[in-house]
Image 1 (cartoon, rainbow, N blue to C red):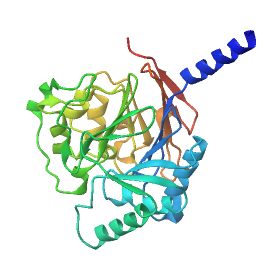
Image 2: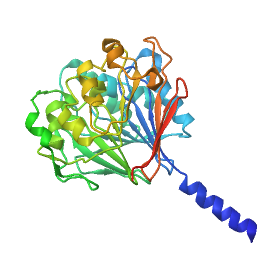
Image 3: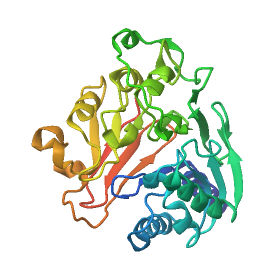
Length: 334
């Protein structure tokens, strides 16, 4: 009887210890964010660049295998640009992808856009297609994954858990129009108990403000992947300061993103505890980069180190830098 009770206790303890894992793979200024649910299902946001001898596909696969993942259950394409969509076909040729999630066809035209769309369609032909709109949910077991932006539209109703409050920062916001695919990015908010993570791809200034003005339909988040790699065409204070992340992750490259103006907006966000970066931003200098311990790659010619977040249902989480094994735990808020 004692051994049976001990076995049951251990089983319950193991179940309770399960975490949400988020891995920010270095694809040199593109995006590849691997989310692994407590149940072991996987969602990949974007797949980096094409070319480079399959560099980005190889890095994603290495991260997936290290996380115990043998397939991608959902591959969410935020938008049709090479640094996000270009790596989809190389990945699909090397690793199983089951469902391809997107906002519909490419809205850009011309030979480069057509070539990119054709390569993406070759990959989709190997799996199943799921076209989403704001308000839809991606059925990843154990998580609440809500589409908050897609094809230039935003959720009509606020998210539960704090969304819907008036945003006083809207009156100070200026406009920066953008007709490109960036403004049509598919964005998601991932919930796991009291923990929330937001990734809205390369959504640009005006559409970000539409999401939180006049009311903030998102509410606050724990971890925010900086929009558009930290370029100053995205990331207005009206959005960043309204969602008030505890931690921001900047998926910049050495010479892409991490612009001083955008970096300062994030750094001054109320309640921000830390800003972590995938790369040291050359343009930022010492004044506009975070502490070296929180930067995954210090050199421009790097080994492709990433960052990871391990989150628990109570809202606590840990961020890990794979370059130096430095990690920091953020306790659950009372």
